[in-house]
Length: 222
Image (cartoon, rainbow, N blue to C red; front, side, top):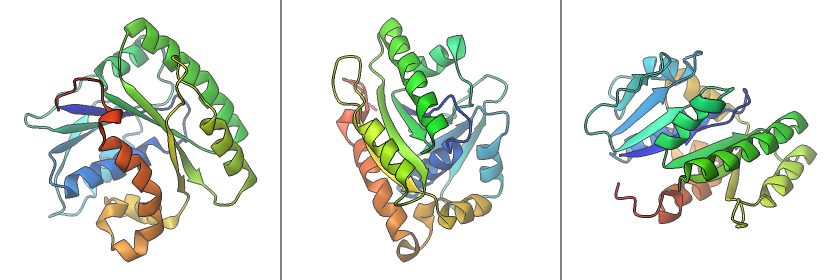
């Protein structure tokens, strides 16, 4: 079973948007997917609660009490992590994950917080000697804004502890399509392609990376 952790220590980065849309993407591909909500706000669980009957199945896991009981047969586990994950709790999350996706909102405050958190993650990965794969995406981006360009430049110049380029993959726009999806318990991948063409295009680099060997530890067998 593969575990994809959507993680950022700062609130408001849009982790639930990424987690729910990823779960929807895997579900429509016929993959057995479970969505674990660890955030006390329970936004992912609320999304699942309004998911239309007959939609591709996404199994819900309430992890707000600290336990993750993953259903048998799950192929992909998406974890919507809470904000303010640090210390021992962060260590437990990273130990379990194969892939980490870090959404970053283009604001000066969020960019500075991301810099600190990347340092914390890098130090933790050294201690744990884990081969978990990590990538960042810009999220809730207002297109053609100056701060979006700053975020793009910042993430594009980050380096991993071994000196390799940090895998910054794409920017996802702020758009009503995501609000509509959240209200209806759907992902943008379950709307008509013509209505979400731009959004799907922006997701493509992330999905291509997730579907490649570069996004999982060496020797991962699925």
